[in-house]
Image (cartoon, rainbow, N blue to C red; front, side, top):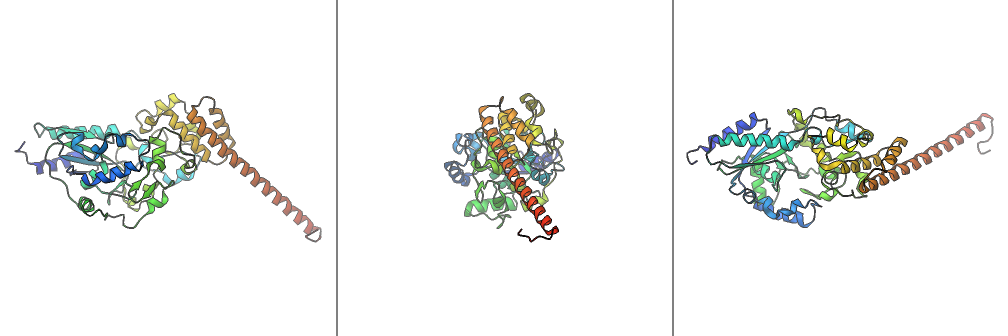
Length: 398
């Protein structure tokens, strides 16, 4: 292996990654020591909620060589996923329709990216003897964003997602752990990341912007660069199998799987790239579908229709739970009330709790609608009486 020109090999790796369809690539060392204290503090505050896997492996998440012995470099890759005609505003505005995080409209990215990373590893192995590698795509205790930042793929924004000046933040990240001394990539992002580690101060292109913090529906970004998952819509609609906190349910709106608000408001996403991957385009009309249609799905239909979708992993119960809350947030409609009521008999205890809440919300809106209608009718009658009195030439107070 000593005769290998690693600089040339790194250049070939960049070429191969482009041929495999990755949007960008960087190479970094594995020193994440400066992030250990941040990780420990985040876990100590219980910001991970019931995601026990975040704490289960301790500091291994910040120590790649403990996860895969022998690792000395990480190849970090980016893959853009923004689908064509994403219809963000129109769907969020129409409370009768379901909003699904745009990364989940197509096929599951985990297998797709892992397969490409595996292919990249095999190409490298053809040029190296005794070469070991292991691909990861959001599937193990890996600090993907700090690694990507060190590799020069972007900077970690105040919403904790990676941002790239030329590509926004609508992209997936993946990693290939390797045991060869490749030269690391260096640019403004990686330099800023290293400076932040040394000075404990962040200097990046977020500047003084706090748009993502202000727009978060549940105020889950508790301070710049810190998210309390327990308040995050993505967490309690995807990761948590428990009841959604009642105080947060009205704030969900029609978001039934994830939330994109912090990315939607980010100024850098005007430079976001549309995905060139067909598998990431919307399937099964999930980008423009009503809540009632989705709530009508049986478990069998859910499993069959969402085969190969990241949504499938949350299970049918969480799916119904989420939609029930969104129907509670929808405008008052007798059909909604009937559909919710009809679902009570066959629903699980967890789903029944959320249907009951949704019915209460709908009935409250019905009561308010009736009061408003009565008020309008009363005002209308008073107006008619006033007109008739004037027409008869009587005093207005008669």
